[in-house]
Image 1: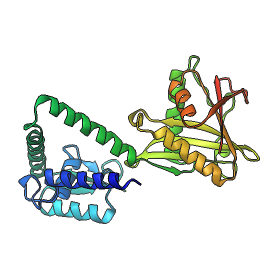
Image 2: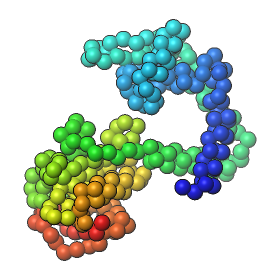
Image 3: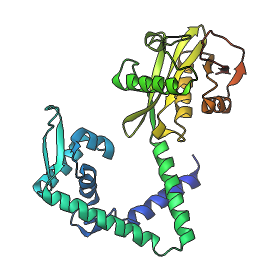
Image 4: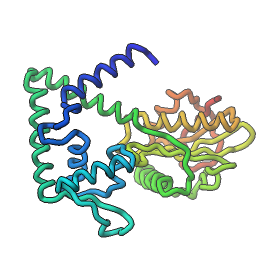
Length: 293
């Protein structure tokens, strides 16, 4: 890793935490630290399930519980069993908590305005554009790709979403049982494997591989959710599949794609795949690729 890049990131982090007051005991002068203020914001006027709060804020259960207990002690929030599922707990703001939420909203707007106000119009545009790019790249860096059983709930959701998209985009629709299909068993050990990409704990992409013979695997079902596109998710999924294929002792991987998927046709050559002759009878395939690992 480049030492200058690491130093720049650390300097940027120090500047931001100081400028937004993240180190203050009284964030935005409301009498409580940033952690409690952020919890109030994330609970919001509609309330939120406690497990989702932990996921969104990236907190372990112990720290999240301490924050919620503090807000309860201040009369700002209540934690109760969910009305739809008694096994789950839900956090809701009290009337006092809703007033604090509104106050934080106003002061957060004022802080943002104080950052932008000293700059002319052009520099404001440069700063906000740069912030949008930093946000996009930081979110991309937080994406995790891991092996997952293809029968899991998140895997099923990804595959169902993928099939719906193909049905909408392909000229004559899409039937997952037609052609060179990849079944769940074929993407499960010892016949293959499956990976899921997650952003903030939510599934946003997937991909699988089935072993075709000694040293040969075929990549299937590579998909990225709309919300996570242009973040490099597909490339991360492909890299994870290739790394796992190497661990399985595979020397070559191949795949096919449809002419409607222009983004896939552009991605695979960038990742080192070369076009080859047809190697299957998949009725939805128009292009075939292969890569030596």
